[in-house]
Image (cartoon, rainbow over all chains, first blue to last red; front, side, top):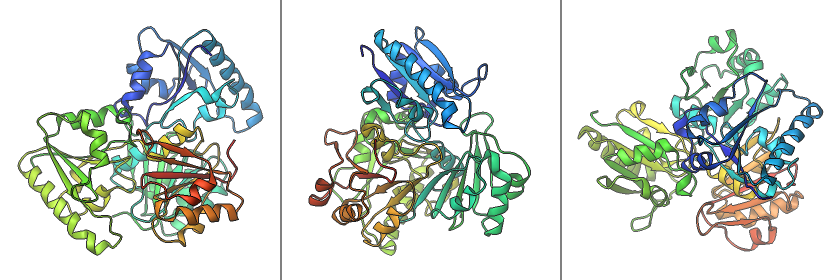
Length: 234
Length: 234
């Protein structure tokens, strides 16, 4: 390969919460690969990164529909990897941007196995969404000898009980589809006062709530994190 | 309070992996509070932050011995909080720096309860050590519907089994005191090829290893992270 690939974590939402290294790489890259969930839909990662990208960089938005069936997704990942390999062959330095940290639940992880030489990529870590959620709410993720579990909820209702049993402190990612069921299960366990919902942190649409009624009655945005603390919230 | 307190995550080790916001706050703060484990010992957080701190800032190193008994530590936390409150009363903007992210296992979390007005502090999240460990080794933290557990090992040998049973992917923090026992337990479970050790990431002393012999035979540095993947490492 003549060019170099970077997987760049752009952090949780506030453009100022990008690392100095990520900003430098974005300002120097020849091409930016930005994943989005549907054609025509804006990419949140690109919104965060935009002010740091160099004027001459080529911005390539690639669509990854939010399917849960891996066999349907493979063709998208393969196409994206092929496109990146072409750019690298042309000698371009390419930055693949992801919200938060590239090594935790990112599209990059699904795609990288289809690259010719994923081991040559450099990964620039980013601030995770749950770190900003904790910062904004003032609720610690974990202290002392407590454990922290990070659990993606997705669409499987059976996952809720496993999630709530998984540790002293639980970060629930992607709670959107099952937020009502989650609210019921929190109440069943006497945890209705031991959670905090943080949505769209670091943006103008930020919402922070500890109200179980809000969680049970209204769908939460896709970009939400719920922190549950079995020891309670002070 | 006339001044403002910031809890600033300086990230995992590489000074370039600090956020733009953290660098700005450090450059503007009147006083920097830097925790260290013993008088005369250098503070890793301060080493990371040093290049970003303004020339006129007062740097105050405060000692927090690594005791595991909370009642012994309380006097240190109380003293530190009192000192910070004094500076804030004098109208100074104060930055308390922590390695990684302030809301996960930091000294700040222990200390903040002793402040007069902890709710007025602004927390600037940082990149976690395990995100850099994953970036440097190329080993994903979690993908798809996998869970991630973060477990501090400390000095209790019984914690090892609980840690290894806690999720699909496990980040073991502070493995230093029990690394030999951990190596044995990994081998007992057939996981001797499913871990990676990352020490002092982002520094000149960085060490990455997947060798179970290395883990069992030689003590690992204090600033180490071990990632265990039950599904194996590709």
